[in-house]
Length: 287
Image (cartoon, rainbow, N blue to C red; front, side, top):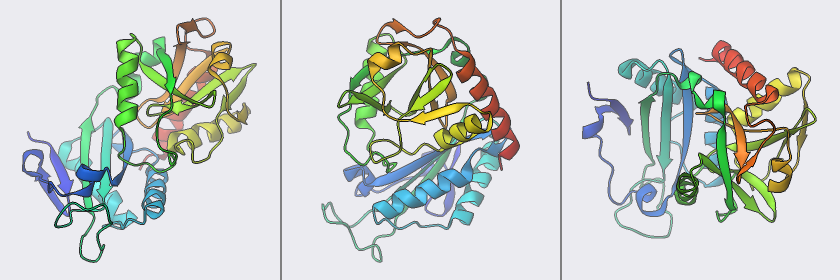
């Protein structure tokens, strides 16, 4: 059965969904996106993703073609039509398709935003084998623009970073700027030292991760100590543990950074426990 997607008010078989060649998301990467995970057929952290979407749209002065209540119903309808139990829902809103290419923003009253949603069915998402063995990362220079707090579709350099890691026989890359780790290519980065969880503080330098916010809240509720500050690759290599968080990986242990083994080279107790807590609490709160 063909996957059903949502495009500008219509539910369509994916092969029938068409977007204009003049769409600014295609020509200018002038768009924002969100990815919401699905567990047990329900949406995880939907409210957080919806609020961040509204913030991203506001920062770019971009109109939303739907209300957040309508967006929730679209998500649910896509899950129903595609019978998704575990997986993700991808959402993208662009500034739309004016009559021709132009650097100047089109008049939103004349050019409506484009909205696209589709599901990705991923059975076993919560039981990813990588969580039991941990992942390996390399470090690369952070060459992205400086509004990383806006979740835009400008993902070329993160994609290049993923490919650099793959070429090095690793799983991902951590981005480094002015000697300090900003984040991973598509995730927030953490280290653990002496039981203390250390992760970069919020600013325009990193994405304000929805999973990040939940994990840090759960960590504090579990009486774990959290310190929000920058850290170096060298500090990370000397840490007891390291891990990443994202909507699709939840909490994922890191066991090697630039060839240096972290801790015992296996997922540590803090990351392992945080993953358990996150999955348990997210399943209970999913809608």
